[in-house]
Image (cartoon, one colour):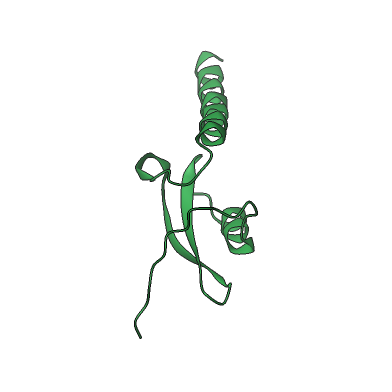
Length: 86
């Protein structure tokens, strides 16, 4: 069966339940990414789970990504620094 790929110029503002379900069950690192696809029928499927440092940040709100990853990174640094001082 032949498939096709179409890159959307817009990204849905709602998160597919499948991505939220994966995030709720699996957390390999503080910051990571998940690629999800939508079929012609409107079904969502998990394509890939990957590390954040190798992620292609296409079609996303870069300001929101930088803000959240910075927040998480600072929290982790503070936790590690506090433990080493105590």
